[in-house]
Image (cartoon, rainbow, N blue to C red; front, side, top):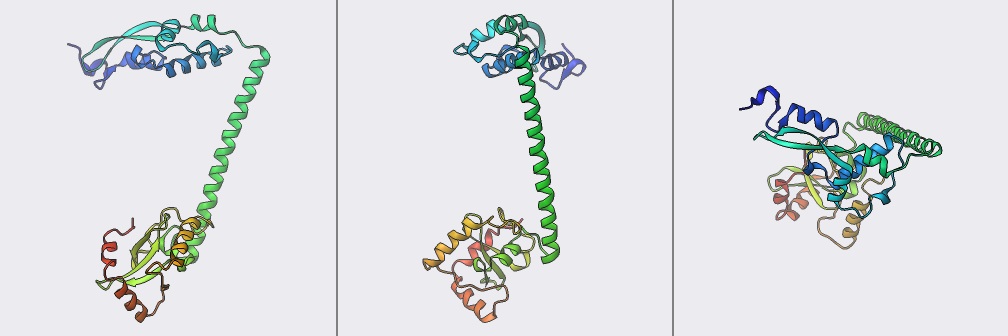
Length: 259
C-alpha cells in the first residue's frame, strides 16, 4: 500500500500530480470549455499567434478537447490512489489552427498591454491616495469632535433633526436615529460614540441623503415619534417622550445596532 506521507499532498493527489497541475496539465474532467479556450488564448498570446475566436465558434466541448489536447502523463489522485490520466494543450494543433501575428499586430498588442498596465497602476494609485485622504479626514474629525465620523454620535451631531433622545421604560437614556435604509434604530446614549453606523461618513457630504429624504418624507406625513428632542433636551420633554414610547421602546432595546 502506498505511503501517503511519502509522496502525497494530504489525501487529494501525489506531489507529481500537483506539479503536473502547475505545468498546465489536468485530468479530462478539469478541462472545461472555458478552461480550454483560456489555455489556447494564453498560448497564442505568449507565442505571438493570432487568436481567432471564430476557429472555436460553435465547437462542442468534446470536439475541442479531442482536437487541441492530448494525454501527457498519469498520476495518483484521491485518497484511493487512483491512476488518473492527465492532459495538456497540443501545441502543434494550436499552431496549425492559428496564424502567426504580423510585426504590426505584435506591436499593437504590446502597446495595449502596456496601456492596460499603466491604467491599472493609475487606478491603484488613485485608490491609495483616496484612502490616505479619507484617513486624514477621519483623524481630523475625531480630534475635533472626540468620536469617529462613522459613528451614531457623528450622525447625531451632523443631523440632529433625524435623532431623538428618549428614556426607555427601564429608565435608560437612548437615542433614536435612522439607518441607511431610513429605518429607525436605537442605541444607548453612553454607546453612541462607539457604535458604527453603516454607510454613514460625516466627512463625505451626501452619504446619507437618500435615507434622510425618506425620513423627512415620513415626518411630513405625520408619522408618530417625530418631535425633535436634541441631546441636550430637558427632562420634562424626555419624560413625555418616554410615555409615548412605552409600548414600542422595549422591543427596540433588544436589537441595538452596535458593534
